[in-house]
Image (cartoon, rainbow, N blue to C red; front, side):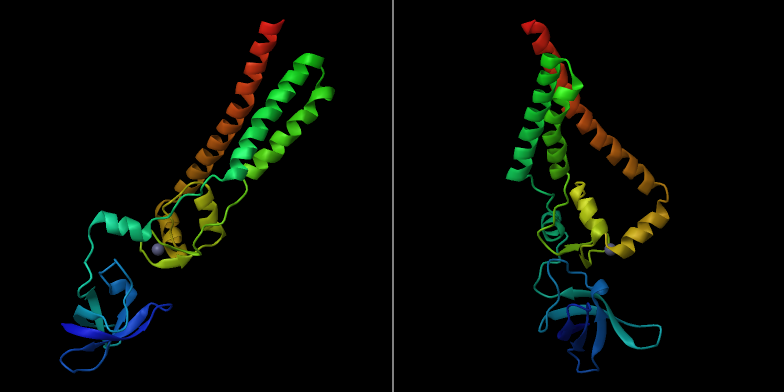
Length: 221
Ligand SMILES: [Zn+2]
């Protein structure tokens, strides 16, 4: 069937198609739109299949917007749903510098004075900088395309946390719960591996400069 979109509520994700044969307007939902290059608009010519819903009302499915590429090419798809990972900014780089200098100073001071009391406070800036690096950043866009159902969803604390942890595939709440149901053990596992990764970085940041200091001390002495 062919028709024209005469009504479209973008926020609600549904609208109506006026069929070209002059028959009654047909309801359609965004989930039945096959074109994912862009959202439907009033005035779009569309091809669709007509069906009856559970209440025997006419409903359009397999809606394709005419003139817009059907878009099965992965480049256009990934462009439309791509989520940019958090970017390191100047604050992060300064923090890394502070951590390095602070740990070096602590190690150096400890080997110079041989006393923890006289050297521990040199590591305070490192701890602060570490917290600064791990602060939560806000995504540029308030919304994202769900990687599973591709619906536009608003960020919540869960997706912002995931995004901060470097996940660029985000799921809307409905898909997330579905995914949890399908993979009951996955959530725990991913939490654990994240914890390990974080600890690994911390150990690396601490151990490497201290070993460096010990080497330097040995060499000087
Ligand atoms: Zn979804």
